[in-house]
Image (tube, rainbow, N blue to C red; front, side, top):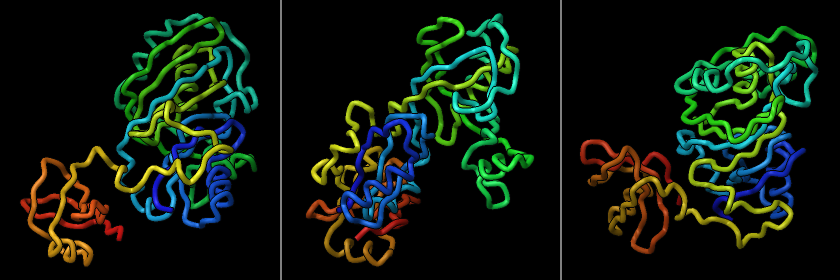
Length: 277
């Protein structure tokens, strides 16, 4: 089995729980996921199986899309509904649309103290649970779209399109800080992760081997180059060949339609970066 399963992650499970469930269901050890979802979140969680686990390095630039709900009035220590309130409840009085606009674009965002981000090699949430002071470093993220779907104070439904690595919990917390009333995330659903969409996602307990998206259907945003038998041998040994494409990377296939490698394209040369066969 080599490919990707587009799973609709259920609430209450960690992303690692889903990976373990797939390992057990198909009796295969080489399984990984593209992009962590918090336990309270649901939605698109691509699960790579077999050789597909190796292409994760080429996925990070893929945008993510979410729908969710924020509660105004107070902040929590986890930035979501499962945390402990850390501020007194206050009414929503500021201009939400102005605050949202100020949180759109390129931002330096601080991850939540209760997160998987590592501090000195230790996940931040482990330090936070021991009441240790956690000094988080900011990360550059891009909020491409942040819009109100519906608002009925103290609740607001929203939609976000953002870069990988963005914490929607932090976005909710920061929105509350801008408005001066505090806020936290109450619900979250990922509707897109790169080329994987919620309308194609599968329930974990119903997924089968027939649902596997094959290797040759992955990374379709990259151009496809078909090579001759002689060039195929070179590619499989990691050697560069002559070729051009209007992109930084390309997928290399043989005459049989087998996905051989991911290669970089530089000055008329095709240089294998990941050989799959």
